Image 1 (cartoon, protein in one colour):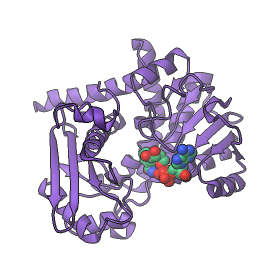
Image 2 (cartoon, helix red, strand yellow; image 1 turned 90 degrees about the vertical axis):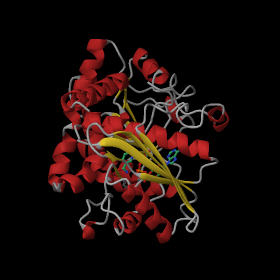
Image 3 (cartoon, helix red, strand yellow; image 1 turned 90 degrees about the horizontal axis):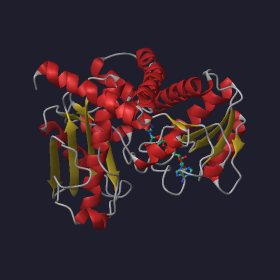
Image 4 (tube, helix red, strand yellow; image 1 turned 60 degrees about the vertical axis):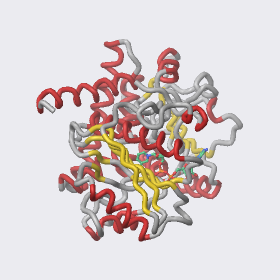
Length: 367
Ligand code: NAD
């Protein structure tokens, strides 16, 4: 298991690539440069034992290249485990483009990026991530078939967020079943932090089931809109993390469970959509366990999005994507059992089960 994000200064003290803190036996790292379009990108292929490495492209104005490299290493590894635990025949990969998506992204740059993806002959398949839109994936599609998340009119799978929200809802219900003996969320107080694409649909599921939903967001307009539409209460306190609730659902940013918050949490369950919720997966996962807070691993319960794009490769329809996503409920319960039996955290349990699947396939295929 690897350590978590560290500062750019600390990263610079390490060997440039293989010695990076987030390097975890990645198979291939591709540095892409194009003078004419200004493209500077890194494609990280972590593991392809289960299948081609699929993961989105993030465009971000990184402070420096160390940060970009660290991000792609960390994110591509995360994709390996997400696909493995979800039962998909996909490996883990991710790409980052260094730059401001608002001012530096052009169709020429995206096409050039697509050419680099194409040069890997399908070992890496890209998709949308932060700073990307469906139309950018359409541009990439003009030069390579190794892209998912393209427009529905071009045979794509459409917006993944509602499917992601459904998976989070399933994971949350499994956690309730484990904690309370019933998976009903009726009457349970759920704090949803971040009511964007995923959070709003989650609020919809929860309110329909009769949960008492409290919402928090930095965007006041969203709070008013979503609050009014679903009858959700807007959080008005001053210390969100100590709010007394049954379930805390982080659906905004990563690393909200950190040194400052982990002892404050006043919830019985953590189950949300955000990636990398534990600032340090070993330390904070363990503290949650010791405090008796049941953590539904983020990379499992937010996998609805990848299940949705996988339809573009396996050619299944939305109903099948939803059916597969529903299975997150069963997998979450299996992970809780495994964690208790082996006296490890739920996060470690999910990683172990995912790694076992990869090891098994490796053994079978003799790779
Ligand atoms: P989004 O950008 O649509 O929504 C995020 C929301 O969080 C916004 O409303 C924003 O105002 C709010 N927010 C930002 N900072 C905040 C803060 N400090 N406190 C409270 N609210 C804050 O994003 P999304 O697509 O809904 O994704 C939500 C999370 O789930 C992200 O972490 C994303 O990486 C993860 N995720 C999304 C998908 C998907 O299919 N969209 C799949 C897997 C994981």
